[in-house]
Length: 142
Image (cartoon, rainbow, N blue to C red):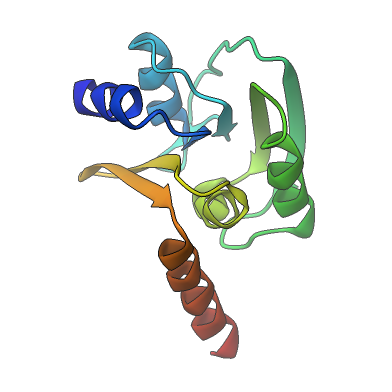
């Protein structure tokens, strides 16, 4: 987390989003300013105790494993307009980094955990958004 904190301080992104309970908990503990946290009270598909986060707005959405619902996508888009928000997901938040990347302003940072690997930090740039859209198109064609 120290590297992430330095990155956020140096780049001053317009938004920082975390997807996942562990990364959200760690950013909270290390004082990294996060605008949107997306949580499902699960890690490695096992229930964990909820993280107590105070935010200006809290949203609740349903998003089954392996999909991205329109409700979840639209809620991410709306929550990114807030200064500070939490989305509590009933189901699974694993794929919600995709709409977070696509709906974030350019130069925003999206952070999610990769089990047994560490953190993945994505900067929402036009080229990254194009790459994510192409990946989604390939997935929907199959």
